[in-house]
Structure formats: structure tokens, C-alpha cells
Length: 334
Figure 1: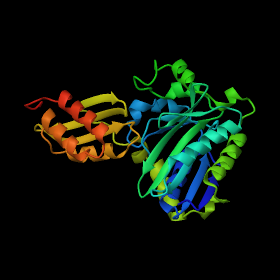
Figure 2: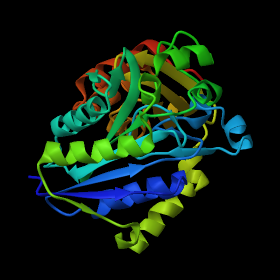
Figure 3: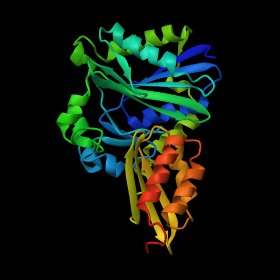
């Protein structure tokens, strides 16, 4: 049960510092508390935990323009952040995790600013039929739900840096991206970052009916923060392992897209890499271990996937069918 709400705001725009602080808070959360974290990044593409950065983002253009590539701990797809985008994080224990008061707070905050908002699907919020907020989730020892709120972001940059997967948008052009999203300031020109922050803080306090106390950055565990900071700015975390050729299998489903790269040795899977924008992170982390060492036949790979993905019924079915249909039925491809 949530007994207290602790609020922390980051004043800096460095994505590696901000994401490190979020992960540090996630690891050092106290029982019975909700940490509500507000933060902004400057010109950053943030990719999901299990995504292939080279497929999701024009990394060369982004970094040549002085931007940053970052990777978060949650699943889901790539997003663009700039100073006109306000990010929020709800951090709780797994036992206290409940999306209902979180959703209520976001909708109430935006409505208090004079904009009618509603939830769309599991991870979006819309106004005037267009998306102003996308959310992602992580569940480990503790739980994290974080998201964006477009206040006055440069939506043209979304199309300039992001590679939109087929099926998500009409085209990969800037026009399609811009038409799918909306800044709150476009709907009410009196809305800015300061007003949005204040509305969210009030709404969270009301939704949880709990006292709100502030946390300062210098109160967090310094050693834990430094470790998280080193991780988030490291090339190993940001860029991940590059696919090394081999056999590529891909598909897009109701829950998201998946790319599976298999390196073969003597007709057996020697190495497997999985990239996905699925909100559920565990399948992409479980699948490589299950497929490594399996003979390269659709039937055997499908069976191995079904076994390890048993807790994830929809993903299990789609991945098993994808492997069965995409790989040789009997012999091996050398």
C-alpha cells in the first residue's frame, strides 16, 4: 500500500544523467512509497531495452547534429525527446504497482490545463484524436512506468531521426509522424512545461491521497548513481551488440515487431540475437538462451521457443509460428 509520495525533479537535460537517476531510484526505492520523477532530455532518441539502434534511428545524423542516443531499461519502441517534452516516471514496489491511479493522474492533470484527454490502448494518451503521451514499463524487483508528454516539442525531428517500422505509420516521412502526434501547447497556447509540471504534481497528490515530500538529487545513493551513470553512457549499453549477419527472421504482430538473428555453425544455432519493440521485455531476454545450441530446423526452434515463452501466450504463439514458417522444415541450411 502506498503510504507516501516522494517527488524528485531533474533540472538538467543530460539523458544519461536522467536515465541513470531513474534507474538508481528504481533500485533504492523504500517499501510503501511511490517515487514520482519529472525530467527532460535535450535532443535525444531513446530506444527500448531490446531494440536494434541501427534499425530504429539514424544514429549518424542524430549525433552529427549534437544529439544523443540513449537506451532505457523498459521495453517498447523508440521515442524522440527534446526540452519541449516532459517525461514522468512512477516507481513503486511490484506489490504496490497499480496503473489506475497513475492513469487517473495523467488524465486529470491534462484536463485541468483545459485539454480533454483520454487513454488509447495500453500505452498511449490522446487529445483531439492525436497522441501526446506514450508509455513503457519495466518490472523487476520493483516496478517502473514512465512516459512522455509532448508540451512544445519539435515534432519534425521525430521524422528526421526515427525510422518508423512498417505498419505503425503511413510512411516514414515527417508528415506522417507529425500528423500522428500533438503538442499540448497546440491545443492550448497557455500550456508550457512549468504549467504541466504543476498540474501533474497536484494530480498525483490527489490521485494517491498521500502526503508529498521532495527528494533532492544529492540524497540518492551516490555509489549506485555513479554505477548507473557509467552504464547508461557506455557504448556497450547504448549501441548494444551489432547483428553479425547469419540468418535473419522478422515479423510484426499485434504486440510489436521482432527481429531474430541466428548465427549458425554446422547446422546448429551458435548465437542468437533478438530485437523487439514489445513492451514485455522478458521474451527477448529468454529466447536467445533457448535457441542457442538448437538444430536449425523450424520444428526444433519452434518447440524450443514455445517451451521458454510459455508464460507469454500471445508472443509464444507468434514467435513459434514465425520460426516454424521461416526456417527449413527438415534439413539444415549451411
